[in-house]
Length: 287
Length: 290
Image (tube, rainbow over all chains, first blue to last red):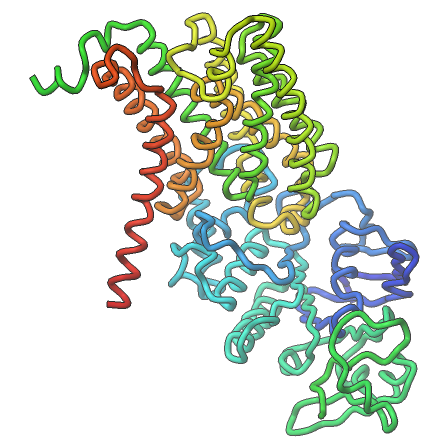
């Protein structure tokens, strides 16, 4: 496949601890990929490596066939190849910034000077606001919008530079079911209609199941990748976790549960877990 | 008749007033512009600290017989550099870096102010440095103030877009390839210079009022960053000019023959503007609940 992003045997050590080990996967334009893993599995670290903000101790990342170093290469250019929506984004409600201002910053924030208003610039911003169904609140302060509305504005901000790869770090966290579904549908549309490769991290895979082309499943710093059918299987995930897990299908929802004898782990809280220990699993928890 | 009541005799023919009006306008516009970003970045404490540190610079300048503006600028720039080195841009280092530098500088100010009053046998210097007077700015300083002001505005204009995105989210800015740290350091320099300019006109201690007050007022009234900067500048200029007018008129108020300090009027007017700017939101909330 003509891949836009290729992560090749990436290992990251942070102050002596191996956060990612030998992680490999690739994604192609137009594909929507879910990066699934519990908190502390290394999702954000992997994003930082892809963005060039974190150095990989080993392995390499290719963006459109070219090596990504830690330097801020391509990111600063127009038509930046990567759009990024960070995790837990909450804007100060006092910030004097309308939704359309934030989208406009996506166009040219890396440039010096004051933006010169032009018809073309306005039209481009308007078009992007329409693409994410954000025209109704385009003139509202971003900090006053709901979580789902902010998420849409941030997606427009990330997309307006026409990236070929869009990274979203936990975009569904803090959203209610309906807002999450709307964002998922929007992202699927962006992938298929604009031909953008979309990589979404999430600790819960079920909201993404209807739209995911591929899945990268992270546990204990290691990854399994492929189609959902290839990866979300008892044998593959048991191997990844290093202990037996079952994959159950209940009314179209997938539950990943630890095998008999490991029940205690199912009631643990999310957080950073010692390596190779089965953490609470990122399916729906069966209690 | 009414005009004569408002503008006391000789207001427009006074050289001091003319200089004050010019200096006040330049300083208020610069403070409003930089202050808008200060409030958005949550660096009000750094702004206040740089103002207080101006006391060290101002008292040092007095001791060595140099113009106070040079003292304010030197102290501000050095303090900003040390804050940057200690790590003001780390989330947890922000208040710490500011506090440490502030403490050290004020200790030095205690010594310098003591030497000022013993060696020069005057107490007026201390008061001018702390609380300032825009009437005390000499005509010769005018070009320097205008030049510094233009420089700060040019720097903010240059940084505008990367700085704005950094205010929204440092992570998003970094992912866009913006050198967030360098932008933050350049902004800190602009802040130090803006505070020095405010210190020369309303005093080192009160400089924060001019920096933060109009900006906080503007943030309540507008939804757009460019407009917020314009409103902050306007509020600052209005407070400055009205303050100058009231201070001039106060020569005719009791106690006779001594005017009230101009900085008092400016700061009070800024405070009133901030309180008034809260009214629309308050009324809206009342209307909804009632």
